[in-house]
Image (cartoon, rainbow, N blue to C red):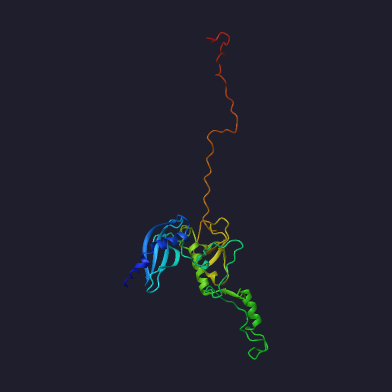
Length: 278
């Protein structure tokens, strides 16, 4: 697309544009003139450097215009706009997309969307026919709503919403990445958690592959672990051999030995004259 040629009268109105920028900005923060851009016929935007601290690369943009056949240029608007090298804040992202695991603190509330794909409706009994309707049987059967509700509560399906297949799949992926068979700890373990006595299996469909570690000395204590995970705290790990018993000491220090102070038959030294007898 061909660029417009700035209107001559609007392009010459640099001082008018500078006065407008000086009036809008703080004193002494309007810098050098950077040029003009044609926005439309008889509409030109003049750009001035912004020297305001914290606004490096920003520019004062003053738009002027004139009516057709008029020779008087009037002021349109004055705004502060970022330039190509301006320092800008990161693009705004909704809080629901910025949230990361571990961000939820004490007292925080995390609303769950009504259409969250990780959840699906639980069993509420609303779809069951009334007891006295024509669709209901005369005698209680295995499909009696009361019995179904009791079983649903026992299985944890009586809640308003339960995990969907997608929710189960995402949870399994997270747990596999954290405490799964591909971790360095599991690669060096003597055996997997599947044969460990400290493993507490989960309920539901995830019990086929996951459990909770109950070994207080293990790195995954209290966490959900994959059956393929493992660590040195396995209940059936080999017992470390005891150190060998040291040999008996060569010198018996448990009894006192009588030792002679001088050889038998030797005469005592003459301590008075400092000589020994012949």
